[in-house]
Structure formats: C-alpha cells, structure tokens
Amino acid sequence: MSGLPGFGRFSEPALLILISLANGPKHGYAMQDDIAEMAGDRPGPGTLYGAVRRLEEQGFVEALPEQDRRKPYGITDAGRQALQAELTRMRSMASTGLRRLAVS
Image (cartoon, rainbow, N blue to C red; front, side, top):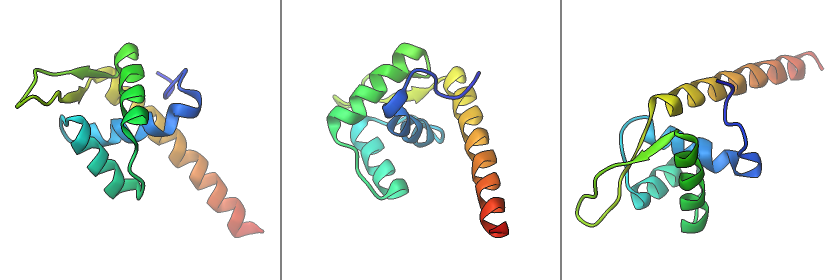
C-alpha cells in the first residue's frame, strides 16, 4: 500500500481522520474535537464528512452501528496500513529535510 492514493488536496483531512480513528472509533463531532486538539484547526462538517466518505469508498474507514443517534466510524485494517505507509513516508521526508537544513 502506498499511502493515501487519489486524495489530492484532501489528503491532509484524510490523514488527520485516520490518525484520529487510530486509537478507537469516533463520531463526527468527536473527530472534529480530536483533530482540533491535534492539529490546532477544527475541520468544518463539509470537509470532515467529504473526507470520511472518500475514506469509506477506499475501504480505509467503516461506519459502525449508530449510538445515541450518532454515527461512529472506525479505521479498517486497510486504513491502518495506509496510515502506517503515509506516516513512514512523511517521517522519511521530514528526516531528509531536517538533515539538509542542518548542513546549510
């Protein structure tokens, strides 16, 4: 698996959603809160649910049974693999960039 293919400009919201769901299922509002705490910026409902829909279409997240009129989502095994690949790619890129800054 090679990261988050086909997400283009939506890759950051998708990545943040996968990170949010990595420690357990959440409904939309809980994801927004978690992402705001993690990234310092709260995604709007359109951005969040658009990315959730695309992640669901790719098989990276799945809708879970409704709880108290809230619809939680969970990360799938494919989503965990995609998240791992993307974070590994980002770590490698960040490491290279930091090394190059140290030399200049």
